[in-house]
Length: 290
Ligand SMILES: Cc1cc2nc3c(=O)[nH]c(=O)nc-3n(C[C@H](O)[C@H](O)[C@H](O)COP(=O)(O)OP(=O)(O)OC[C@H]3O[C@@H](n4cnc5c(N)ncnc54)[C@H](O)[C@@H]3O)c2cc1C
Image (cartoon, rainbow, N blue to C red):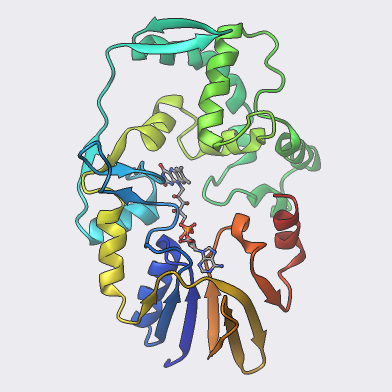
């Protein structure tokens, strides 16, 4: 009770951490590098399209318990994205067209192949590395799990047509927000496990429902519930934990002391911050290989 806690980052994690720590009786202060709240969620309201536009996290679902809890708390309404009458897709630079259902149908078999192993690897989908810790899981299954993690998502699809491969490539590039050549097949299998191993449910969870007032409708309300100050445009350069607590160093070289500091910034931005003592080696490895 009564600790002074500095929180780095005002995305969903930082804002919720602050709100919950205050509920436990602590005093919080948030430091955010950007000039706005929300982090990787960002609903713009000043664009020329004339309606709010999601620039980051968008899709929500009742099978995603944490965001769903926040939606209930702040009475955020969902809307359903429209089904399209006509879909277009590319195969070897040629445009093809059909209904959305036809497009989904073409993805069915190749996705089932990509999802192979999802039940075996993720008996408890909310606990993705459970089998690695489970003494009862045979070693050969653990080995195949590790191998799947190192295997690109589109590997081993030789028997499928160019069209099926092109569609799967688009799907997973969008899903991973990056190259499907570098993306681990394990994540696709994990997404399948979180969706009862069904493509239709995966699509519903990741592409169907959004918020009427956008993500902003939630992150602005969480910020109102945080009583401590939220400093925007205040990047942290260094975090130093010691026996008495923790010191934050700001971009202008000034420092502030806290009883504890919670850092909620993403792996891609951790390299900009100096940590003392250093980050755990596994985290540092991720930072180095980004
Ligand atoms: C394009 C896109 C689409 C997405 N789509 C979905 C979706 O449909 N559904 C879904 O559930 N999720 C989606 N996500 C993921 C979701 O947006 C994120 O998982 C979530 O917003 C992460 O929240 P966070 O608070 O953990 O991190 P962030 O939102 O990244 O917050 C971290 C904050 O730390 C700040 N920061 C960084 N460095 C410093 C520093 N040195 N000092 C101070 N502050 C710093 C950042 O500016 C940021 O505001 C999407 C993400 C993106 C990018």
